[in-house]
Image (cartoon, rainbow, N blue to C red; front, side):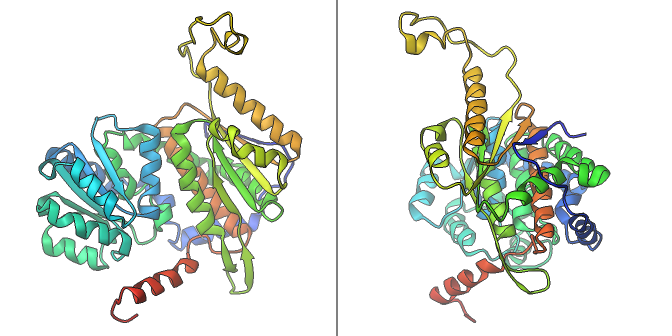
Length: 410
């Protein structure tokens, strides 16, 4: 049973059975590899083993990756930090200033270099890696995370003798956070990745056991209810620890459901624009738009259970009315009160509001969130009768980039 509690300010019907049937059909055909990751002991073992090797080389890791190869890792590290006290620098953009800045901060004799691209040919990632490789000047410190058989990066890893980890062919980039893409660097940071997988397993087991009554199906049906009438989906966790998770959700939702054609090739033009927000900070900026602007948004608010025995604000300014009422309360009480107030105000305005209450942020919670939103995204895609696993819309830009840079064949 999932420890998460989901509710909405509006009524909605159950998810169509056809969506659940499509899910099981795709799963039986081996196309939903992300659903097998929580029980893949081999991938867990090789991720932890590689993390131990990297830790023996030094306390710093530079990760080259973009999109699905970096956003999930950012979400894990943003939520859980680095319990082992090691440093991880994630370089996504081919920006020489950022690359040089990281090189100045790091000692190559104490640094491992991880390059993550499933295809083995992502130009942004490879350009960053190629600039860092001569600076590192040590093949024993290179880790490649890529397709187990195909691509130039796999070929290079074999030729150079680099450490390498596989990304299963059936696992798409934006669904890969629970594979070595996320688990290996997270384990290097000292995060208990077995607990991450345990949380993911619980949410998956809930869906496989309860189908349309499961948490994932209820989240999907609520989102589906608002999908066409509210073209903007605001995802607003009430803890800064989960803001990178909101950014991860934005890629997952946009790239999976923004499709020109349905599963039969018929024009569909589906999509809903995700907007990652942070509470309470965006109460002082974007909430003004939500409250008085167009009623074109559905809001998801993610909140934690109360913090037990959190420190209280000391009584220092009793003579000042704007401060005295806060004294003796905790910052977490204020944050929880603002979460409730914002959700209530947005619902009063007439916006559909979804609430997800989670336990305190932990490895299990993060694994559960990853699996919940991967399942909900795929189910919503199948309910819309589009393919939530491909991304044909980004391919044209890649072709034009290759052409502009003079790549042979383009």
